[in-house]
Amino acid sequence: MKIEIIVDEKADDLHISVTCRHLTPEIEKILKMFRMMDHQLTARKNGEIYLLDTAEILYIESIERKCFVYTSDEVYESDFRLYELEGQLEELGFLRVSKSFLIHLQKVQSLKADINRKIRITMSNGEQIIASRQYADELKKRLGVI
Amino acid sequence: MMEEKRTVFDYLAQVMIIFGFTMLILNIFCLAFGSSARDISAIFALGAKGVPVSVSFQFLCVSALLTGVRYVFFTDRIIKKMPVWLRCICMLTLAVIIIAAFIILFGWFPVKMWQPWLMFFFCFGVCFAGSCLFVTLKEKTENRRMEEALRRLKETEGKNV
Image (cartoon, rainbow over all chains, first blue to last red; front, side, top):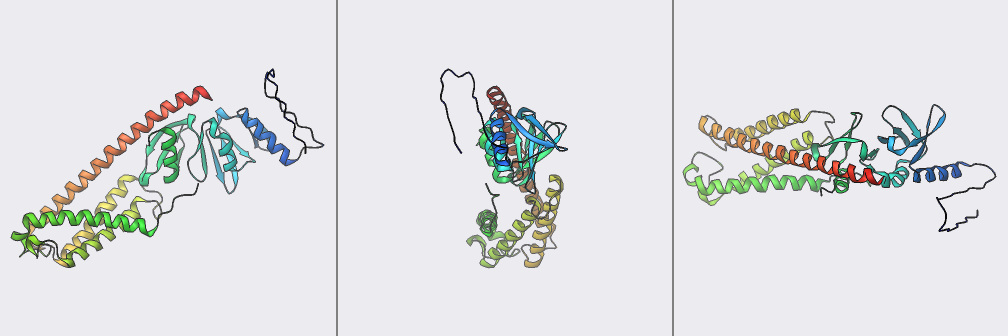
């Protein structure tokens, strides 16, 4: 595999070109990661591939190693693991709040302290997610309240 | 990041916090009322000298039991879904039952006298109401701070994303 990087101060935009004999799952995964840099997430629904704008996503849930992406009215499946999405989407305003949930902070409607130092998160569609104790501290740090 | 697990040492620390605070209050009571109450209460058997060792161990048992009850109702390890108000009522009821059982078993005060019972329920009620008020105020302040911080974060990150 050859990697060519051209630094051109006159370039208008980032240009990524991939040349391959055929698309492999690994190459597709790399392409999906590049799309995330462009605030887009590739996800599947009923066998079709969708390009989701990350601003539309409310939260992502991991169930038995599968990741489900929730928008206000649809649910999609992602090929990425939750930790991979966490790494890619952190800079876009997403935060891990428990072992299974990654939430979009822009889509949080309200936060409420719950028993045992947990936080009850109400999303903009009214659904509630519990931030576990240790992740609740991370959420508070992100909010700047501790 | 892994979920933080509570160990037996966290449980023991909680027991010691309740026990230490109770013993401090009891010793203050001993200094204040010990001499006059030594004949009617096992707690004040040594008068103003302090709380007897046997009573200290009884209070250690009460602290351990109350911590156990708190573990049952104020974590979701055993009871997964229960409203907070119901958890509080269950916790309060069991705490009263446990303490009343120790009062009767170990003669902390004469069971047939109504004045000590009135005093017990008054003190217990004041402490419980005080702690509820403290927790409620703390929770309200924390919720308000989080809401304000969330609004600020949405404004700043919304501009950047």
